[in-house]
Amino acid sequence: MADSPSPVPAADDAALLALRTQIDAVDRELLGLLNRRARLAQDVGDIKRREGAIVFRPEREAKVIGGLKADNPGPLLNDNIAPIWREIMSACRALETPTRVAYLGPAGTFSEQAALGYFGSSIVKVPCTSIDEVFRVTSAGAADFGLVPVENSTEGGVARTLDLLLSTPLFIIGETSLFVRHNLLRALDTMDGIEAVCAHPQALAQCHAWLSAHLPHVERRPVASNAEGARLAAADPRLAAIASTRAGSEYGLHVVAPAIQDDAHNRTRFAVLTQPERHPSPRASGRDCTSLVVSVRNRPGALHDLTLPLKEHSVSMTRFESRPARSGGQWEYYFYIDLQGHPDEPRVASALQALRECCAFFKVLGTYPLDTH
Image 1 (tube, rainbow, N blue to C red):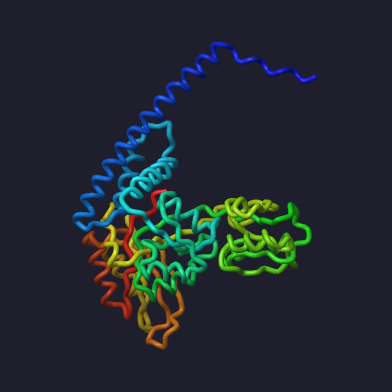
Image 2 (image 1 turned 180 degrees about the vertical axis):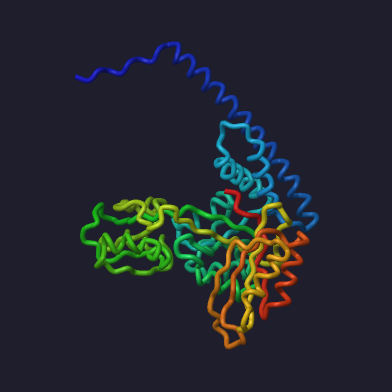
């Protein structure tokens, strides 16, 4: 017969009770301080309404979180600072005005997870059926902000997002990145008898090698989102889905194979979009990115001339990606470029001006604080 667990000594019981009593007291202190912060946020909101100022300032929130990380004495880890304070700021912001955020739905998508991570959970969710709908809803003013995937560490740029950034008036005011862990989900707790795997095309591509090795003869069925694939798999036991554990919980599915993405460090970067007339460009935060799309006429040395202003003004380029031009113009490709810095900095302003002069097409897609997660 197994030994009975040793009873906890009375002295330890008393120590635990004392510690829990202290924790309860600290929790009440925290609640009081949070309500004090909320009242101050309401006062700020009153001033903003009188002045017609905007509620959400991504550069301000980035500065607050960065300052807290710098002053953090521990033992709380810096990685936990951002999500805690984003939730606090989200709850306080909701007292001023509800923030409506459009993203690729339905419930359980990585886009939803990214939206909640960036804005906090005190938002009005506006799930959309496609990236195109996110742009339409945000452009029409039915959402204050849209959140769309812009690039993946495995598959590169999200083509539809890049094309829509080129052709719509929306601009980027923030970014966030998410570790993407794909799981094979199914209503039955087995991989036997799967006839098709449903997922967003990007997810299918990010799991290509695993699917080829483990389900080589199974149909790969592209759908609008991974969560939509999970919904379909919940309704049909012949189907499986590639999605997050959050989507699996949402639709009551089993994880029949965890972490099937080909790249163990697979991440997706998301852009936060809004209308220029509704939200001014964020001010410089000290750690900023400026995104633009340009084209140059097809002539010898054109690409060299495109990068020369950046070198001359000591501006670093962190991303350079080309997309075919679909119009019948004088150029063949658009180039999507991310630069370190803010146009308010003289060196960045000079580099942008020089770029504008040598480009056949030039559009700033947005300036925003770098991801603080």
